[in-house]
Length: 356
Image 1 (cartoon, rainbow, N blue to C red):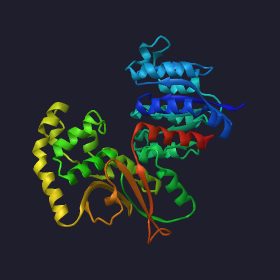
Image 2 (tube, rainbow, N blue to C red):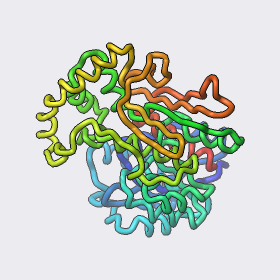
Image 3 (spheres, rainbow, N blue to C red):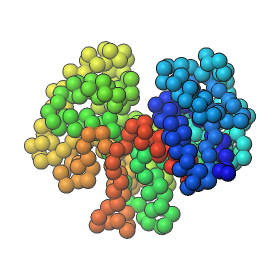
Image 4 (cartoon, rainbow, N blue to C red):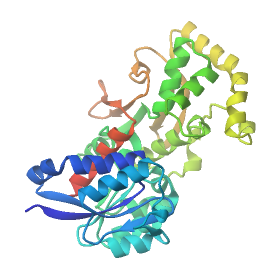
């Protein structure tokens, strides 16, 4: 019989639903390879939760997936209740060997994650906000051996485990560079094709590449949080405010509604057309690049020579290039699809399997 591993899931959006689907579909594989069954005992969204001490059946999980896909809220579900304190949910629902999975997009989960780790539970997160909070919170979370965060930087790409392996085997990581935002990678590729900036942003939003408010991507903070996580893994004592961030829109557009912001974007078309043309004239390509090294981190739009590994990435793919003592002449590269619910869920699931 496979060992039962209680799972508490915080966040049942696109990634959360993809994870539950993978858990259901891979029952036989997990039983064979791990002798394990991931047993969901609690699920929570932004304002409600459902708790089943004996674990949800796969049939019930299917029903809950359909309910969430249709826009349902757990607080309004017949089995649901007001979420209240997430720490209380974790403390009540958890058990020996439990894993708490944070797929929310909120820093409000931090106390629950800390409580779970203090109780000896495993924690897996794709949520960048706890790890990009103040340095003390980072240290409290990551000092625990049962904390995993692979999907925070490259979705399903093995970025975090690669960096862990380099550091754990004594390699000296001198510099990391990469394209860490699928959204901004898509925009860079479209600009290179001659698409107007405003048109590219609207198309990215229509395709679901951006957040509902595209400024959350265009402001560079998502890429900055990823760079900060990598920097902190290198031991740099940085706060998010220490990361140099280039926003792709002026600060005076922050006060606009989303509709007003989209309508105002054509004012930026000429500037980005000129930057793209200048890069082309110099034989270079514009890419939104994250750089970590020398105790610092920054993200911004840069003209890169065509031979640069980051310049070669197109569309919404991601790439991380590790320049180290061992990989000096030919750096270590991790690249591929760095976004999407299915890939991110797979990264989370790999962390869960590592904990088992």
